[in-house]
Image 1 (cartoon, rainbow, N blue to C red):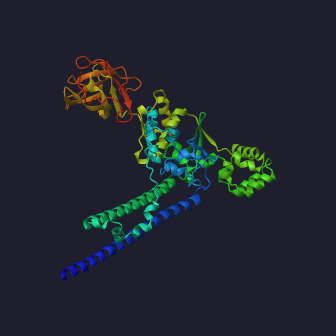
Image 2 (cartoon, rainbow, N blue to C red):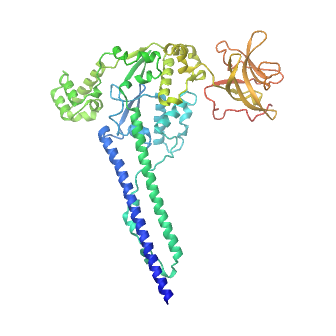
Image 3 (cartoon, rainbow, N blue to C red):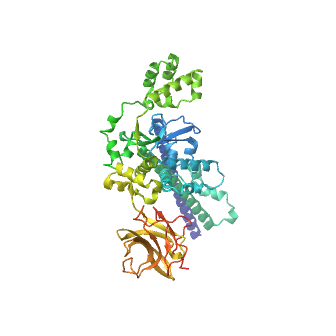
Length: 558
């Protein structure tokens, strides 16, 4: 009997310890959840403060926006631009930062970017919005034959745009259900009361109890992770916006390139110090090239009212309405016909015509560029790549330039980037070569630049011949008759190319236009080792082969 009493006392002690531990656990859980809830609220409160300070609380999500992208006007609805939640593109056009974004002289948001790439992103987002099929992964394929393919990928990464429709739709906001304090008040006794006492199994109960506590902890960890995502995303957004907010050196330059309009930040034109563009738009020189011009977008309500008072065509009643409605310059530029209707039937035409007249009279100065549009646009695109890629920037190579413009492009680059500075824009090199259609299958594949032969670049790749790994080479060779030919051969190890010991497959005469590089056509089959058809080659600026391109590494000679 004494043992039974002792066991009963021990059971009560354990019960008290268990319930006490549970209460402490629940209290701690509740406190942590309350802290997380307060942290969520703090982030939302800060967003609200930023919205009031820098944004527009009355934005229309379906409004049609005109965006000046490098001088090209691209139109899209705000809902399309903001549909990928959490992306930096969504942040830019969310309305939270309207007052910080750079504008052109007509009040349109300006982006110092490649317009082709941005247009492709807009088309991609429109497809994602309206298409029910997950087929938008083909976004880059339409640009696969153009230099902008790499730029497009970088711009999508820059803005945080995802390719497919399987987006992360996490709300990044706390789930109110896990903050339910009543959930923490369930006691072990409640569990006993609702359990079939005839089938009580203490081990099973304790195991279930432990599982419940583990699930609570997992919910708490999930809430912490969600909170961290919200904080990180918000800090990234602020950092991103800060990076695109213009400085005094980021004023916009309007260029007239033989009739083609381009708009670029002055800081972008000056990104390579010491160039002609850098000197032309230097802080000490540029102000003297332009007269004092006004931007209506920067006006406050007082300046708008003064302008209206001094405009002969604007009646006093409209001036009073501008003052009463506290219309500033940015609002004046974006007033719609619908928004003016309540001011009277004539107000629309009067105000809009007056604004257009002002913009015409105060149009920003255009700098005329007397160079070919293709050549100068390629230079501008390189400057934009440098601004976007920074340390990852690479100059153009010969395959990046349309052959029709090779000569004039070189002259234009030399004009703006004389001497060795031209290498900042492009290198007159071919980084790698794709050999295709050769009868000797092992010859086909990607060759990369490796050393020099006869004073010019040579190219090599590892392949298979007669079930053995060998090195194929492309090199230029001076023959005994003083003519120069390009060869595709296997050069014996530790020997110089161009001897009778080489295993030659194909050869081609030196091109007069590009004697320093293997010609793309005119290849001939060399007897003994070569097999028809002769190969053709393609100059390439990148190393990775395109999808479906032959590598040749696994093919033997046939």
